[in-house]
Structure formats: C-alpha cells, structure tokens
Length: 201
Image (cartoon, rainbow, N blue to C red):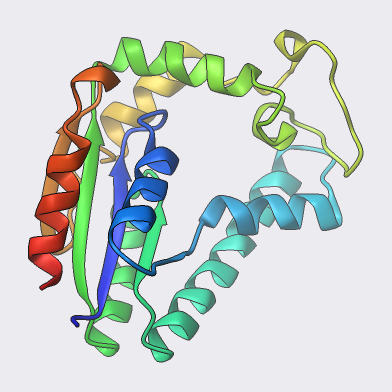
C-alpha cells in the first residue's frame, strides 16, 4: 500500500474532525496528528496570562507537531491531519513528505464565509470545546459558565480577514479534492471516501 498523508485543509468550521473520523472508519488504519491537540496540551501544562504568552505556546506547539509527523512517517504510518493550512506550513510539510516518500492528498473544505462564521461561533460556545480557543488568559482548571462573556472570541472582521488573506482557501499539497460544505446535508461523503480509496490503491 502507498504511504499516504491526508491533509484536511480549508476554512475553519468546515467539519474537518467529522470527515477525519469518517475516513479513519472507512479507509483503514490512519494515525491522526492534530496541531490543536499539541497546542491545547501546552496550554493545559503551562497556561498563559496574555496573548503574547498564548502565541508563544502556539508557536512551540508546531515544533511538537512536525516532530510527531516525522516520527509517524519514519514508522511508515498512514497519516491524517486537520488544520486551516496556509503557506506557513506548506514548505515544511512538502519537505517532510518528500524526505519520507509520502504521497499527499489535500482535501480542501470551503463554503460560504458568512455561514462558516456563524458555525464557528456556535462551535466556540460548545462547552466541549477547549476553553483556550476563546479566552486571552487561561490556566488548567479555569471555567466559564457563560461562554458568551469570553474575551477572546473571533470577531466577524478578523474571521473574514483570515479566510480571505491567509490562503486557507488556496492551500494545496499533492492531489486535491475540494468540497463545498456550506450545507452539510449536500456533501457526498461516500463519494469522497470512494475517491480516496482509488488514490490509495
């Protein structure tokens, strides 16, 4: 079997985690390497008192992320990873995949940005979502009963600026599958799985 790395890219709030779970369920054994996991672990371990500390820890989380990518590739694992990837990650991911001779598939999830912003807000209000995503100061054990009062919510303008100017909607490494997820009910998930299986043969 080919060595495959699947990158679930595109805009935020497009259902990357759901699609990752579907792929893992239907396409055999994949190892999930999630940048959010590394970031949240550092936030829990060290906490932060302001945005500068938060950004520093986020930057350090990428070191762990790329290290885990290399380890899993060295071991020959099939890999899936989700993030709103941009040019910032392209060079390193391209270099790693070539070093370990991995074929890359980018599944780029796009959609109407107004719909995605509303979806993003609802996701951040969910108590299951790690609190660090919406606060400017965080330490393990912190709680916020009413998440609407969080001081780190992504504003509409910032969300739109990131989506339009950071290259989320243009990222591509290797083979590209692009999916519009404005309406989840219209997404052909079985068709996506079928296309992936063909690529993996």
